[in-house]
Length: 115
Length: 112
Image (cartoon, rainbow over all chains, first blue to last red):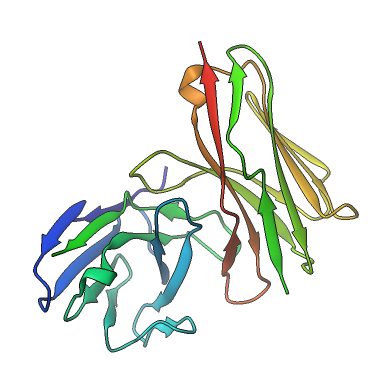
């Protein structure tokens, strides 16, 4: 089945530094990937839609200059949290689908802790 | 405003029984609805998708119903096992750009 690989699975960084999270579709091509954020006991919150070869589409309230998304190929999207602050600490999850209205395949998430 | 509600309280059942989880929505007319399973510290895993013109869908011990009049989906796990313990999420398509709207999830615990 379709597999999405996400790295790292966890990261601890100091306030003010930047962190890059990678999301790869291993056995299918994904023209669109989605980046989510999830707080404890909260629903998945869509941050942005990553489109291969073009700019990402950000959801209302998500700072595009803080959460940089690059979708350079059909199998790789990256999310960079710039100048991280403790309030950015969260669980970040990427997903991709094999086509429109197809189920989403999720990575295993990245637990970010900013100290 | 658009809203999705799932059983807010955790569901505890005995092994071998049928678990039934509810997903209600308002102010939507989704073309399809999906159910996912999420284990702690992991990404969600897709289970079943049901379209608006389908009343019921089955996959092994899982069954999903979709009532567009009641604006409700029910998710059943028959012959439940402790390994079925997880949080179950329902998600609706928002009708544009392939975005999904997610419920908060229901935590299921199956006791041996």
